[in-house]
Image (cartoon, rainbow, N blue to C red):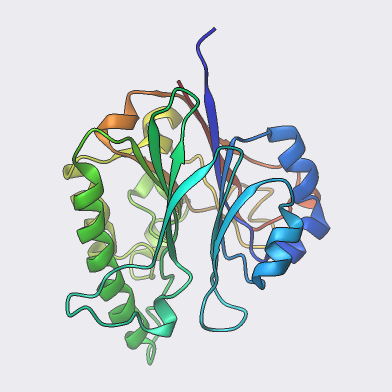
Length: 272
């Protein structure tokens, strides 16, 4: 049989709460080879305690209780790169930290795979919150520059995580009511257009059908989860060297509201 690699990405909405709600049991059932986490929101020692036995890379936010991304792998990590370069070579603003972590993995056949755990800004379009969108677009510009670099070459690369953008109308249940909402603004969605035009493949959509959905985030409030009124904002984006190796990509949605361990569902992909 051909060897396969299972990679899961999940916004855990706080790793303490996620493990308290049953994330450990989910890991045992899903049995991923690589786990990409966002909104970890915990100190490094605690993250490593929860992920004992894994090769772990963790990039916390400079803002306490915010963001934080991690890569946990059963395969060796050979190189790590955290954050995104500013054009002037300066230091990332605190609000941008804990959002972008790259790791190079050594595959069983001796090859290399680059994975990125990404948690992009959510921002707000509410009056008085315009500065959050300014920060988001500045960060997305740096994301775009790095994606252009990772798109080329023979090394397979995967950028996965909570991108906080619903790309198309089929990616959000109430698209008519959210045309002016952050996460579904035309300016945000245009970034995803450029990434896909630049050589990246949206594997969730490619393997998930024409939609609507499958969604990956639902508010905790009301009956949104039960009625499947969600957003598809969690992605696995593959460059050309990797996209053709994707065998299956699924949203691992909990059977019921009570069985959720995060307000997001994991996106799980199998690669040959």
